[in-house]
Image (cartoon, rainbow, N blue to C red; front, top):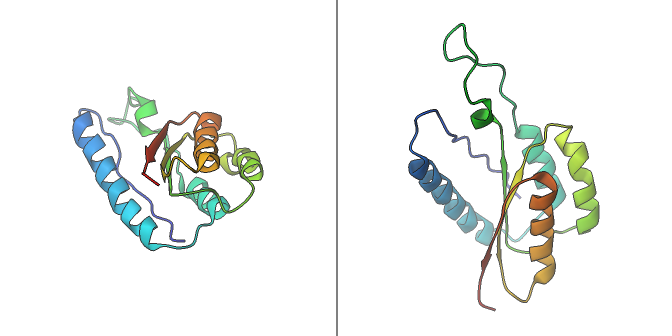
Length: 142
């Protein structure tokens, strides 16, 4: 499994439509890589994503003022998957707090699954719910 980090982000005044377009392009490119990969290591991928997530320092817009919207700088994790986790889902969800270390980083979960795979859908839904992220299923015909 190859970890991929998207370092795009929102800057004050940026067009949100442009940012969303960049995120979608990254997700589609990643899905192509995911389809070529036959191995998954869900636990390792999440642990690595949390380790790579950086919280911003107290940055300022000039030397005197803190940024007006510090939430715009907070990290998020985008978890993309095409099936069930390779480990026990409950165990993986239990480890999230350990990986997060109190930073409250949301995991936005996107799954490409078949309707016949309710366990995979439930795992990514629970992952997003537990972390305060969003869940988006992209269901493919069986």
